[in-house]
Image (cartoon, rainbow, N blue to C red; front, side, top):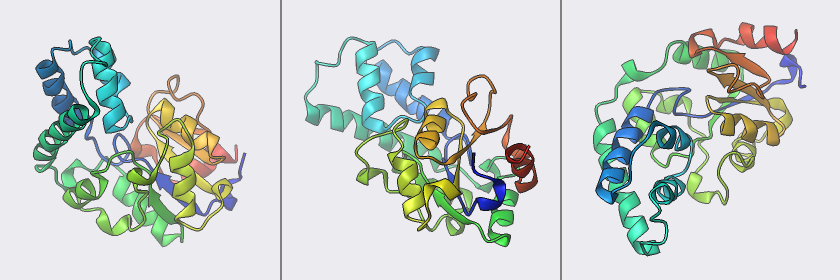
Length: 224
């Protein structure tokens, strides 16, 4: 594994790492599932975490046995409807919605000369960053519209390193989902998991929550 001293860049997921938008996604998808006549379950809700908009819609349709009931154009219309609903919900987000310790960690990264990028599947990431007051930290954002594959494929984290002009091996990715950790690992980057140790057991470094996310704590686990 890469040594802490070799790290030069940090690549962040957004939802579940920097702030929590999952509840708004859940509300918007739940409403659409109800409209489509698909039973909403906790298993379905969990399966959508970190998955792109169109793939999420396909999962919902498949759960209801309706994957062949709509044309591609109709599917795009439903996904757009969900997104419009979601955007109306996140308008109320503020800097108070940033997870504990994140702003301090970002400030510390900048003070120590690390580069920062965002690798989120969300096309709304710039909007969310604006609402929560972190746009200035993330001037380099992977555009999910340019990607051909979603997590756990490494493409998004490979691109996150590319836009920083860094080799993946000197980058660390920060994720809260197993698919995201798998994406980081496949990109040959150091994976930092935020959440359950068992669920994120493939991560190189694991913290229970963002309040423990500090350079000193990362160094302690990487160089142990």
